[in-house]
Amino acid sequence: MKNYKDVFSLKGKNVFVLGGLGLLGIAISKAVAALGARVVIMDINEHKSKSILTWAKKNKHRLFFEYFDATDLNAAENSLKRLIKSHGPMHVFINVSYPRTPDWGQTLDKMTPAYLKANVDLHMNSYVWISRIAAFLMQKDKVDGSIINFGSIYGVVANDLTIYEGTEMSGEGAYCAIKGGIINFTRFLASYFGKYNIRANCICPGGILEKFHNPIFVKNYENKVPLKRMGTVEDIANAVIFLASEASSYVTGATLMVDGGWTAI
Image (tube, rainbow, N blue to C red; front, side, top):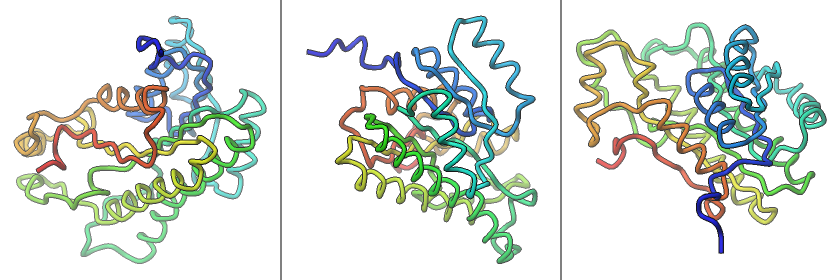
């Protein structure tokens, strides 16, 4: 019989976090490190790594930074192989990266074909390609792997445009298309690699409080959520711990909504 106190432990696991220095990435990296994992943060923002590396040293956690450009698909396979050679086999791969063009946020009526193509390639295609490589490397190393991709509530349902009323904000059509593609490709990974005991799941966050500072938007958003609050980075990190650990050993191909009930109504 399993010791249920230990099923959430990540001791002995190498966890690779792509986009690990972003808003969600930092919380996720700290959470899995606190559960005993050896954490490899993969990001382009080397200057942001100092504070979390200091935190890890102070708390005696094993956390490392490696430069990794999620948008360079031609280099992705060799880069991942190099990291595995340095840090050991990949037991958990988490992609919480958010690559996008500098003009990100074009409204549907202003969107250009070049903008759409560029962002699909940067975001959706990078998720597809890199998670594919990660899965094959897990298979090669014969590990019981867990792949965790990040979708969104807006990859499952359309935007409720009323929550932007009274603000200068608007919905992002390309974002919906991109996140929908990531969610369904993650299901395909689960189907393809299940026989190798490699799991693939997708977390779909709702709005995160730390990201939004417009009080009108926050009020509009929270009025719709059954739990009457926006999510926090800790809410998302908790879900990652579940999918990374043995607690979810029979969960694959799932789309885990972490949204306070947004998509339930």
